[in-house]
Length: 130
Image 1 (cartoon, one colour):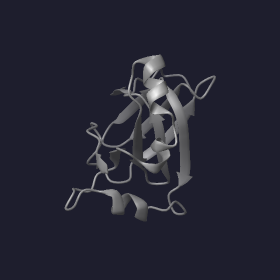
Image 2 (cartoon, one colour):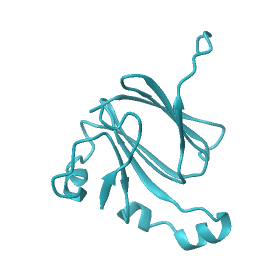
Image 3 (cartoon, helix red, strand yellow):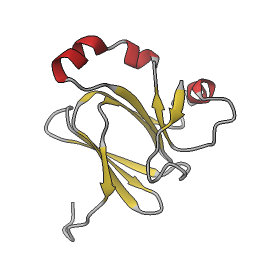
């Protein structure tokens, strides 16, 4: 079931989301522009999906939500079909951490990540162009 993922920007409907992939898929950062700019850093990524929200099947998110759930932009999808394709038992035996399916519904992109719990922080600007 799709459940509210408690993030500082959860109540922002359709925030801007930028995806930054490190040297390998294992490290992914989501830059979320809501009321403030946030960084969501995943360090143990198994899979990543970025889809143009206009063409993504958004109905599947609505069908998987708890009845009368508040509309938010960040979700955790327990027992998702995608998560169930991964050998979670083996993953947890090797890494001693639980995998989750995180969903972020953005203005232009929907982002889904199979990973362990990320770190969320305010985005710090260096003053240098990126």
